[in-house]
Each structure stands twice: as C-alpha cells, then as structure tokens.
Image 1 (cartoon, rainbow, N blue to C red):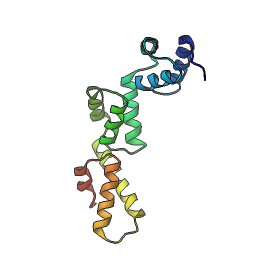
Image 2: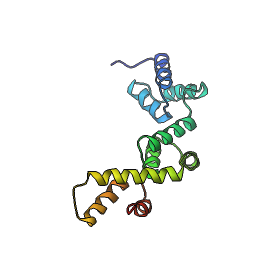
Image 3: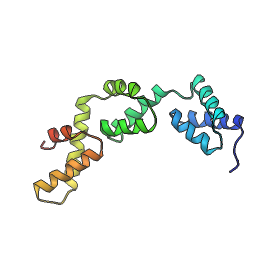
Image 4: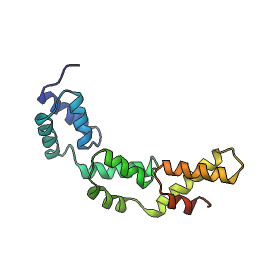
Amino acid sequence: MKPLSPTEALAKAASFCSKGEHCIADVNEKLRQWGIEGQESQEIVKHLCQQGFIDEGRYTKAYINDKYRFAKWGRIKIEQGLRQKQIPTSMFRPLMDKIIDMEEYTQILRDLLQQKRKMLKERDDYTIKGKLIRFALQRGFTYEEVLCNIDD
C-alpha cells in the first residue's frame, strides 16, 4: 500500500473517526500505518480535534461505560486500558467515579463469580476459591473486592 497524501489521510481519518469513538493514540496509529508521521500527523489530529471528530473526554466516557457494562471489566483493567490509550489519569479517574455505580459494579462481580463457579468441576473448596480469585483478578477487580464477594 502506497503512502497517502496528507489531504487523503485527513479525509480517511475523518471517516475513521465518524464511524466510532477513537482517541488521539488510535488516530496517530492509523496515520502511521498510512505513512503519515511527524508534523503532518500532528496537524491532522489537531484539525480533527477542532472539528469535533476526536474528543478525548467523550472517548473516555464511552470506553469506561462499554468496558464496565458490556465487557464486565473491573476498575483496574479499565484503568490499564485507558493508560495504554495514553488518556491522562486526571481525566479518567473522576469519570470512573461518576459513571461506575458501586452497587451495579458489585453485582456484576457477584454474577461473574457465580457463572464461573458453575463452570468449575473441582470439588475442593480451596481449589475452587483459588480459581475464582484468579479469574476475578484477571477481569480487573481488586483482591479486596473479590474476597468480600467470593463467599456469597
């Protein structure tokens, strides 16, 4: 694939952003794949931000909501994902506190643990508890949250 001109890349990036929420890191990666780097890439991203195609706050809200409600991730895994997308902690921490309802969050954890428990064939309580703890930790829940809800 031959590199795109900056004008073609801008149009293609605008189309990319209009199809779904994307952050600056996602757009920069696409531009790099298309052969646009450096100053040209920065100008395209700046233009897309000014035109409203890219909005980090809007992206962060959507990411938190989707990963929490649909993917059923815990706070730790959501935070790691946002850090990988280069979203500042000062932006996502307040949004997480606002978006995540702790009662619903706890119920999601309990439901996940119950579903996983039904899938396990072991009979030893110690082994079952260990597997449930590892499962919940991989989903991004804290050890304390898991321990408080594992016996329910």
